[in-house]
Image (cartoon, rainbow, N blue to C red; front, side, top):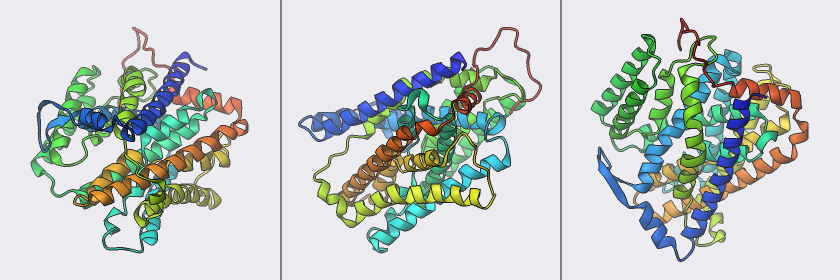
Length: 412
């Protein structure tokens, strides 16, 4: 097993532990005598005025700013696998795309069925459709060296497609208005970054400047700013056949910062939800969200994968047993951040419904996360060691670039 693989794996395990600890601390603070101070700290504003938002609060800097770097890392991982790894063929890509779409549609249908198409609640149909990448990957990272790397790839691919779908839904359904000029500016910046790649620019700093400008334009556009991370990742050069490219260097450099700092901060800022009583979870709105996340996600994701394998649309890798695929499907039910975000947008003028949506999101996410982690933990003996090591080598790779590394002719 490569040293780089072990290092990344250790960072993700520690990051997962820090994330869960931070989320637990946030829940305790929000439901204790320190709640007022906790929320006041998160609402503290600082920095220059930003378009649409004005001066950002600490929570906004974390959720809209730092999390864009998290999405940059996720985008880099998926791009690498898309061109050089286990998503490099159309057949391999079909699985996460179809699973993500089904994993969004089924929870929405369950939500509508449980609420009985109540006109006052129907706007919340997209709340249980989202998957929280940070928390889902964090739960998987808690398995440490026994985790199946193939599952992380599948989970991240499904989650990022899911989040892109959620962002599109927000833009089309829950956004009061989009700024066409800002969207045009974002398109220009993205195009300029793509040209840097096309002309063979391999230094990272021009892309990082472009990333910052792209984030600013996306923030001004009304589209969730974190999508700028995914777009920026698409422009970072990844050379065909090159073991040490700018993309892999950047991925290796930001990985520890994301896993050990950004993700735990995100958990501390986002998990502080006040819960009045667990009995409220049986009310129509929280129950519909909980059912969508816990039942709908596993039915949509696992059911679509099973059907695709059953009818020969895709092939299941021997290193990924059915029971572990089911565990990964459960983890996609961790909606959390994006679900909380959509819940606030769905009921902007009704704080009681927003709180009820938060309760359903927290309950459903906890059920999905705990059950998914437990299933994966106790199914570890089903994973073949040789296949695990091979998958980890492919997934993590070696990020140390020798001084005499040849310059490639083709870039992605």
